[in-house]
Image (cartoon, rainbow, N blue to C red; front, side):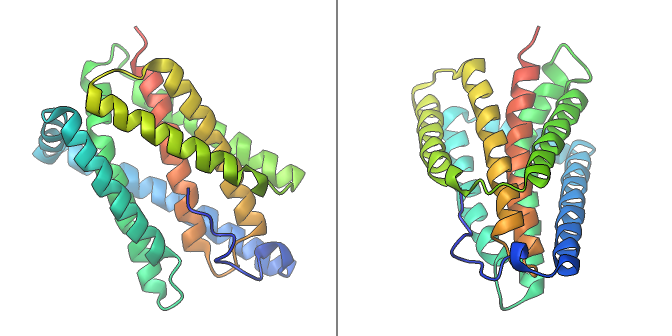
Amino acid sequence: MQDFTSTFGNSAANAQPASRAEFIRKTYMLLALAIAAFIGVEAFLFSTPFGGLIAYGILGTGGIGWLVVLGLFMLISYIANSWAVSNTSVAKQYVGLGIYILAEAIIFVPLLFMAAYYSADQFVILKAGIVSIGLFLGITATVFLTRSDFSFLAPILSIGGFAALGFIVASLLFGFTLGNLFAFLMVAFAGTAILYQTSNVMHRFRTDQHVAAALVLFASVALLFWYILRIFSSRR
């Protein structure tokens, strides 16, 4: 979980109301566009042979394949985040966001493939998406209405993130299933991440850093959607 507290000064919380409102509008408009772009990339992949090739390519290699994909995703995420907070070029910020969206779309392909073709519920992806957006809006409203600073969650998220990563790597190496209990815990983790990142948007980010703000929010929404879809897909 990347912490932008030390990166950003002169936060939106201290800005003029008009500047703060413009920053928030740009951030959430860009987040909506990022989600739309993610859906568009997935639609393209699944309308061509690429979707099946990516899904079978990752699933067919088992845990080792997933470890390689996870490692590459973490590397790309680091680069994308670094570019998104760049102060040298606005274009570089948008490229960072675009790279991250593409990386998320690719890593989601196997899960969406299994949900689309092997789930008993043909609307499972739509239902998971609706629930994810509903939870995101509810958590966002909590931060905006209470105006509370949830920066104290940073250590909890850091510890939880490393613990979750450890369990995921161990499951891939030793071939055991984490199950729905882990998925529910990760939904709670993702919700907490949204709470923390939304608070950062209000209290930590500068008003000219809407690209970086949209990226961290998109990452948290994607994580939430991943595990909600896992839970829904496991239902019989």
